[in-house]
Each structure stands twice: as C-alpha cells, then as structure tokens.
Amino acid sequence: MRAAKVGSILRKLSSVSTSVDKDSNRAPVLQHVSQNVRRLRNDAGLSQSALAESSGVSRRMLVAIEAGEKNVSLSTLDLIAEALGVAFSDLIKAPDNRDSSRINELAWAGEHPGSKAVLLASSPARREVELWEWRLEPGEFYKTNADPEGFSEQVFVFEGSLTLLIDGEARVLAAGEFFTYASNRTHGYRNDGAVATRFVRNVVI
Figure (cartoon, rainbow, N blue to C red):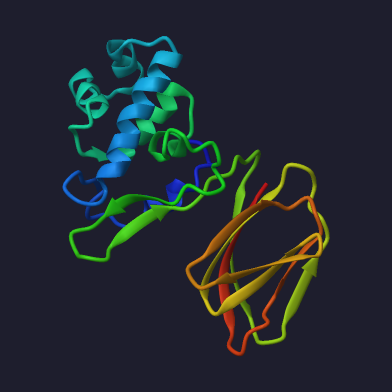
C-alpha cells in the first residue's frame, strides 16, 4: 500500500475492531463511501464484477457498499482504493470536498464510547512521511528555512496553543486543532502561551 496514506497510521490504532459502523453518527462516511466507490468505478470504466476481481472484494460486498447498506472494514477500503488507483482518503471524504488538506471524517469508532479514529487530512508523498512530536516551552520560537518544492507539513496541537508562522503571517492553533500547508516557504513555530505546547508534526517528503 502507498506510504502516502495518512490513514494508515490511524488504522493501526486498534486491533479489536476496524469497521465503519452504520448505526451511529458514522453513517455519513458510509454515504460518502457509497457515492465515491460508485463514481470512481464508473470513471474507471469498470463493472462491479471487474472491480471485485481486481480488488479481491466480493461482488456481493461491493453491491452492498455502493448501496450504503454494508459496514465496511478499513482494510477492505484499502483494497478497493488500490484497485481503483486512488488514495484511501478519496473513498471516505465528502464527494464535494476537493481539499485533502482538511478531511476531518470519522473513519472508525470502537466498542467503548469515545474510542475513535478521525482522518484529519491527507497529502501526497514522493518518498516518505516523517512523524515528529514537539514540545515548546513558553516563549520558545523555532524558525526554519523554506523546504524544497513539493514538501508539505501537517501539524496537530494536543496541548497548549501554537502560533504557526508562514511567510510572516501568524495562525494560532489551540489544542485539538490542525493545519496542513505547503512548506516551501519560510515557516516557524512559537509558543506565546503561559504553558508548554505539545504538537505532532508530519513532514511529507
């Protein structure tokens, strides 16, 4: 499977259950999957039987998925995406969403209330994705030069607040917020708050 899939990290969060359940507020993502699989299959000129053969997913399951009647595992969606030559995110994001830098779709929920995995964003990668954990104490500032063309970054703040500076423009991210951006510009991270800031930074190369 392609390393560029941000969702591959999220899909490994639990080995207990990997299904998108229809009987909850996860229903919207099933509707997205239904519409996207049908549209992408038609765009590729494939019948349901042809897609079943190339993906290894049964035709009966594909029929149910396209009808929005089937709980579907994330691994099954990987097989379908691979066969269609698209990214995992192309199957679960809203059909009218053309911006993969902000997907924010609930892709998995566990047996225990509050257990969930949300695909926040996706970025194409040529070689690899670096996963960083950062901590900035109050007043700390880290500035970096512009990355090569084609690089991008994904930042998710989980404690405190982060001031993200891109070409001199400031954007403040509170805990629970994220941002994806092309990093071929001067950028930096600053903690203007009174407590430590912790955030995850993905460098997409």
